[in-house]
Image (cartoon, rainbow, N blue to C red):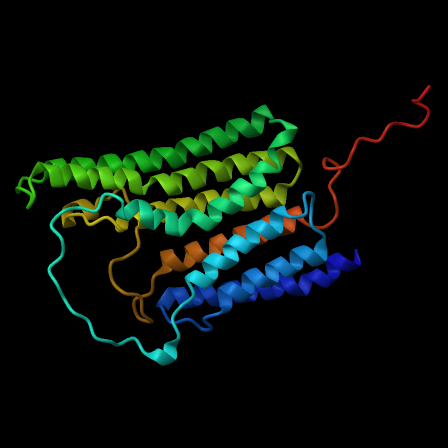
Length: 296
């Protein structure tokens, strides 16, 4: 009990750093550039203080991947200034088919490692029909949203009457690039829902809720990955995009609420996962106790 109480200030500090990080993303002006890194580092400290579940390496390994990604994506030092020399050259006429896929990997690789590691150590207890059914329906929604986005862009591209600069092959390459772009986010969403099912089977409902939030985060990541694919204006503004980030740069007068909310929900998901997995052992994790007098 003492270790759980001593970890509560760490959770409060994690939440404060997460809010600071999301606020900085909202207006592209970080309150403190180390906020996300410190939030995850404090979350790792909380996991160690509260008591790591078996196997003890799983949660630290997952959080280490998140820390590496947070350091990689840390905002630039504001003292260096945003200005510099730029040489403008004509862009390539062909389409980089892997641009969206690479963008999706950069967005989802750390979260995917968290989900895969935790799922690998939690899937052995079997599945419940009720939780599997709910997860299957939710996974269908994630996959269905990806299909709607790809089909919508394909139809918008087909409806364009003007000839493309590189012919019909350029239009086909764009659609193929969009299809590849959605794969990392779809994989994250489906595996996160599988993890939520496995955690619910163990009675880890708080951690299961965190996995569900990670599945929700996959949707804006999906739209962001599609945004990395160069598309014609009429195709890029397809109305089926529910979580697309605005094209303008965020500022105090024109913030980016979707990006900020995505970051806040993602950090909340990690907090719930760690808080739900660490601490006192649940009855479902312990070995069954035989009643007294049952042995011959």
